[in-house]
Length: 335
Image (cartoon, rainbow, N blue to C red; front, side, top):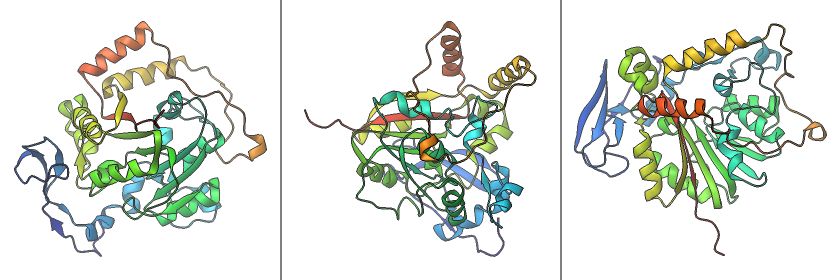
């Protein structure tokens, strides 16, 4: 944490029901995660006040999270910028291309054609670049002005430096997505309500957050420290709680995907590495494609169910990993 900003703390009620009746769910050093006795929401309390939050998002933090300074950034003219590698961390492809991300499976199977997409917490816009190259009309917001400037210059995507609370637009989108963002926001309920106003009828909201009920945090204090990430994570969601709140906001939850536990992920990665052919050709470098060069790609679809996938789902349902993804749809237009 930066020593230039005085740390101010605030004690807050439950963001979702307003109750101040809570118990202690977890402690890490000086930080405490409370659990609301009324609705079971888990949240950091007391927490850094808004004026102190920025001091927890230093360059050292972004380095730790895989957002790091690189020679490529400096080559593009940045001095204090960080290269955003977030979506690559989850990719099963060893060489992601400008049209390749596993996150397309969160979005495209629910549509017959491509439309418009808003990403909240878009960082440098690498995922926006992927979706733009796949034919989507994209827009993104992020709190970091440096990240936004980098994304505009390198990827040519429509990015705005703003918080979700500040951002407003008359435009309506087919998709609003938040990857590893909602847990950082001081007022997640307000942002979920705003997301409703950004969506067209029948549009989808995609949210990926750490899983506060994961098997990983039960077996590893190190994994718990990374998943809870105190005090940056102000909210700590479980699949049941988040899906329930979205239903209360009149969303229809169409999918909730759990991530496998860390030991299983490690095993699968080793298996994939052993099965990788030596000299496998590399994909094209990640970057912005000219409009005329963008391929006409079929929409991504959910993978076919096999006995292996059913076994993986069974293991994951019993011992879920550190994150989960929820897809929820707004009410379709009448008629």
